Structures are given as C-alpha cells and as structure tokens.
Amino acid sequence: MSASASAGRGVLVLAGTPIGRVEDAPPRLATELVGADVIAAEDTRRLRRLTSDLGIEVGARVISYFEGNEQGRTPQLLELLTSGSRVVLVTDAGMPSVSDPGYRLVAAALEAGVEVTSVPGPSAVLTALAVSGLPVDRFCFEGFLPRKAGERSRRLASLADEQRTMVFFEAPHRTEATLEAMATAFGADRPAAVCRELTKTHEEVVRDGLGALAAWAKDGVRGEVTLVVQGAPEAGPVDDPATLVALVAAAEAGGATRKDAIAEVAKRAGVPKRDVYDLVHKS
Image 1 (cartoon, rainbow, N blue to C red):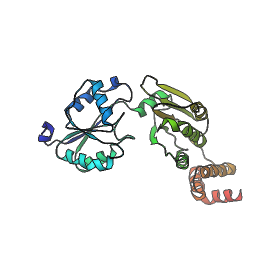
Image 2: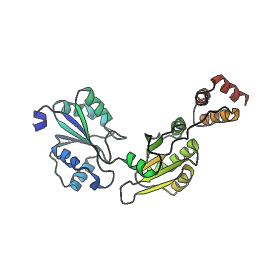
Image 3: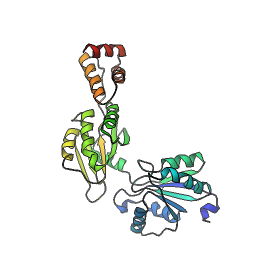
Image 4: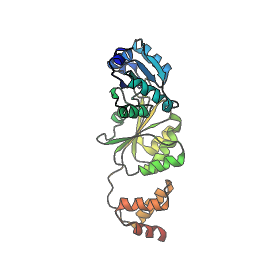
C-alpha cells in the first residue's frame, strides 16, 4: 500500500499537460506523475511519450480513461480515490475536463467528499485569447460547436448578441465550414483570429474578418485549431419596423421557429411581442 493510501488521503489531481512543447510543462507535473498511486490517461501511449520526454519513470498503475469509456471507468476510479489512492488524471494536451474527459470524475469525487486539486499548465483557450489581439477583459469559452450544420447555425444564432470575446475549439477539416457559418451569423466583417498549432513548431495566427478567414481556410487547415471571435457591439434600441422584420427573418434562417424568433427579437428590442408579430405578418 502506498504512503498516501495508508494515510487515508485520497486525492484527485487534474494535471495540465503541454499543448505543444514539452518544455512548457510545469516542474510539478513530473513530481505528481512520479508520486501517483494511479494515473488515469486519455491516451496511454501519449503518457509514455510524455514521461519519456520528461525523463521520468512512473511506478503508478496506469488506467485508460477516455471519452469512450469515461462513464464506465469513473466508478472504478472513484473506488480507488475513496480507498485512499492519489489519482493523477492527464489528457492528451491541456487541462482535463476542459473539452476533455474529467468532468464526470470531478463531480463524482466531490460528491464523495474526495479532495480535488490541480497542476496548472498551458491552456489553448487562454493562449489563443492572449495572442488574438481581441479584447480580453471579458470572454467566454464555447468549446466545440455541433457538427451538424443546422445545429451549428442555431447555436451561433443564439450567440449573435454575445458581447464578450468568444473562444471555440474546432477540428481542422471543419474550420472552413465553421468560419462560413460564423460569418453568416455574426457578419463577415466581425474581427476574429484562427490560432493553429499553438506553441508548436508550425504555430500560425491569422487575424481578419470572419469572411476573409473563411476564404483563407478554403485551401485547407491543418493541426489543432482554436478560434477567437470578437463579441457583438453593444446594441442600441431597435424600433425601426424594417429592422425588426429583418432580425426575425435572420433568426428563422438560423433555425429558430417564427414564434421563438419573434419572442427573441421583441426581447432584444424592448418592444411588445404583439407589435413584432403584427409587423412580421403584415410584411
């Protein structure tokens, strides 16, 4: 039995791993990996590569923990935690549970009264935000958008009035389609940045309007992609009938029902729903 287990100190450690260069790994990452009783890894092969690059050997029990088995493996890891094990959770890159496996285990551990802590490390979200050149005083992270075009358009339509800078993850082969959908939902001139292969040898950050970025992406995009989009300008009161009708039409084009579109536009404009309804049906 390990020292941590014999002392009854079960702890879940969320360990941030480098998003590119291994030199960016915090010194404590190696310490935690060496001292772990159990390492839950999204990809055990990448874990072996990471420990080799760090120049360390680990004696911990290694358990595979990825999206496909996360639900089934969580009770097993929770049992180890409540028995006193120090479990270190690592994903392929970045912080576990942020668009990666981990949330289920964190929630279960906290519910069981297990201590949860972290080894802070590089973050694609914050790195992309910092180098984008866009406002950073207020921002939100939206993760991956839905893969299906209709669902993606509806999600983006719901974010059209978001005034905070928005950060998204995207797969390289879907980047062009996503940028085109964003240009439709937010406007082709909305400032944005495509951050590709952050901290790696072929790092690239392209800054432009969404329309221009969509055209740039037509030649193909490779590597890990993070998108940063400037928020919407603060909206003033809208009372022009033609504008109200156009806003409803845009919301419907994004997948909203007419009823929901009218309600949303009325709320944004600060006018009665009945007034918007009458304008739409008269048009």
